[in-house]
Length: 355
Image 1 (cartoon, rainbow, N blue to C red):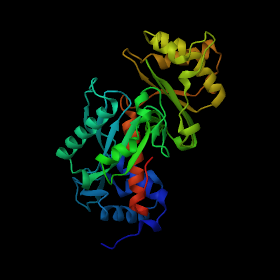
Image 2 (cartoon, helix red, strand yellow; image 1 turned 45 degrees about the vertical axis):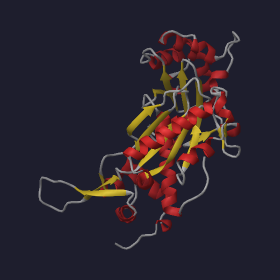
Image 3 (spheres, rainbow, N blue to C red; image 1 turned 90 degrees about the vertical axis):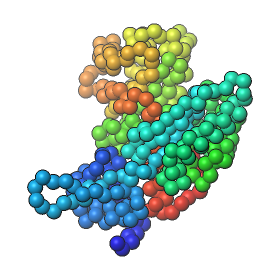
């Protein structure tokens, strides 16, 4: 097969084809052409180049009737991303394939008698041993993603967070790279990563304004997304919606932490949600709930509150939706970022640095 230069092909076309292949178990070139609005010739050229580079694999389509059997494409099932999660003291490690499916995971038992830095080192050692025993990491790992509980300052190599204060004093990229040398590295707030994962489920998300809002019994934060791009503040910080103070003087986060059921959560979120809609005019608001009680009725109740209590007309209201993946959205979002970084390196060559 003649080597095909991907540099000569529009990058967005390559990205669209990779995304189409990654979103399904197997897909034909004709189906990719239909989904991406690219010509069958373009799809064929890019598919051949990706097959050459072992990015995708091909199997024969099984047909009951006689006729030419077209090759079905699938993302290489051996490739994976390694995710390290530092958003809580029980550090977590996960392995995701490039279809964003979790293949493996484990949780580290934090040692209270050891320092935070010692716990981080012990976790990374355990993760290294565990992953190397089960997977061909040098050959098939596309990179390491690190979820952190706040914005990451790459220049200072510090996580800007008060939720796990010890993490703010740790040169995280430097520490991780000692265990996973030569691996592409992406470090990002779990809120940013979860937003990237969730917005892709909104139809025509690249033409819409979307708010992703994470609400749990100990943490409330969100991200505003315009045309697929996260609108972030200083140092890449997501919108700290939980720190907004209400008339009582309490923050939204403090009131949510004291809530006991979905009715109380609905009552607390009604006014800030109304103000958020009036300020940003989003097409869609994605609410990601993480509570120890059932949350299924919150979305319908919030729709009722916006209409009946705040007088919003149906045509002026955004679509309110629950998050699609109920757990570890950030792991999926980090894998997406690594997949794009990997694709960029395939097309343009390896680059230095971490995020």
